[in-house]
Amino acid sequence: MDKINRRRFLALSGLATAGAWMGTAAALAAELDAKALNPRNLLATPRFAGTPFTLGVASGDPAPDGMVLWTRLATEPLQYGGGMPARPLIVDWQLADDAGMRRVLRSGSALAHPELGHSVHVELEGLAPGRPYWYRFSIAGHASATGCTRTLPSPTAEVDRVRFAVAGCQHYEEGHYTAWRCIAEEPLDFVFHYGDYIYEGESQPGVRRMNGQPFTNLRNHVGPQTYTLDDYRRRYAQYHSDADLQAAHAAAPWFVTFDDHEVDNNWAGAEDQDGTPGELFLLRRAQAFQAYYENMPLRRSAFPRDGHMQMYRRARYGTLMDLHLLDTRQYRSRQVDMTQRALVESSERSIVGAAQERWLFDGLSDATPRWHTIAHQVSLGNYLREKDGVLVSSDDQWSGYLDSRRRLLDHIQRVGFGNVVTACGDAHRHYASDLVQDNADSGVISSEFLATSITSGGDGQGEDALARNLLQHSPHLKATTDKRGYVLCDVTRDHWIGDMKTLDQVMQPGGKLESWRRYAIAHGRPGLQPA
Image 1 (cartoon, rainbow, N blue to C red):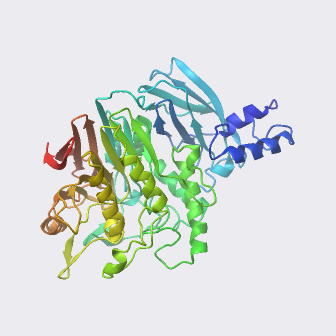
Image 2 (image 1 turned 180 degrees about the vertical axis):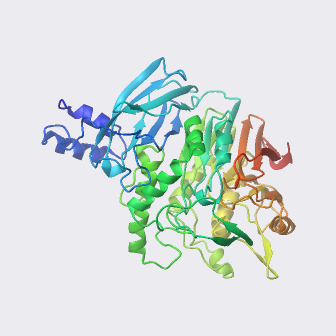
Image 3 (image 1 turned 45 degrees about the horizontal axis):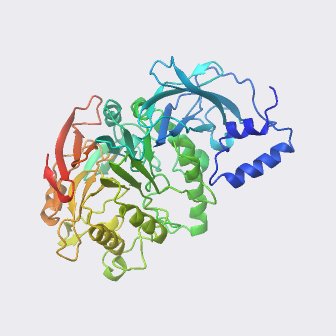
């Protein structure tokens, strides 16, 4: 192979853009100048017996002038190493303005590094705003599927409508990804994935109990509980191999964020739920973060550095809506016993941390967008239910961090735009609720749509005993069901509408989709109304 110059190598490596990578790029460039300007271990002419694009394609973090295009090479996805040679490989990419890829507008190459699991992140800029594009990858005579993506409108564009899906909690063992196939068929501007993309546990053979009912896995995880980078890589490969999930990724750009199961159940900051010494858990967390970056269409700004990922960020959809994507895991205080009210209400504890809270409050104070949408992981609603004669709420949601919750709702009310809606998940059931302060007659401040799971929880029972319990003790909760599905959000200048979609079954293929409940919020008048 011909030697490549410094600019060519940086372009292939995805390191040329300014930002968090500048120091790394400069260091690598200096090293390359001393090493004949090309990687010595590059495999210039790879050959594969089968396609290396078994994990599909995706795009994400769209902006008015570009987005990230993603793929990850693996000929044997469930093997450690994915069947790939442990050497860098050059992958070609194309971007077109038609689905048939006849009018190619951009093309280039990227390096798939073994250090990053042979993942590819092509970060594009300079594209036209508010329009669709199509893309694909190729290597060694093999071509990927074609994906569809789109740029956001110009920040000053007077946009009349945006449609997006809110979805997550896709336990591989607990159902078919029928909901992802339905999402792939929706005409969407983007998808928000609120977290729990993978589940970290080892499969339990035979019959087990779930939600008080006997349950047998539809399909099993490969491998043990995930601790190492190779464990996490293989788990992502198993999930990415699903055809319905691949279809949803290829149909529209995604905004993604993680919750707990991408690392370990109910982790908080530098601690897990098992009492593992913090310095050891952070080693596991760092490997989980690397695997998450490798397998998601994320920008370089999210690249793990020193065991940390920058995940909270903001996107503006013209003048219609600002999307505030939160990280409620890295900066949160440890969960506490909910009977210790002084700790639950302590101002020393936070679910988002001081810096992220200031960033969020600044964003919500901006009068430019018609709507503000807070896209996060766990419910802001303080949902109560009776258990053993006592009213309880969750320690792992905002209800376990009441000072954080009160500060946010106080800020929304004080700003006074009447245009904030939150979208989240994690609870494995749909919730539609108004949001009020839990210690005052505040009136309705905001509203929340919590999207049920894609599969986690199996088929579900619908409006079950827990739903009746929650509705009895949570007066601002309008509706809840534990059926699987997603929330389709349709936002216009005058209304923010949440359409809670459900499937009658996920343990069998071909589940029937229906619109279970629809609620609307009128601009400037917080509160859910049937739509």
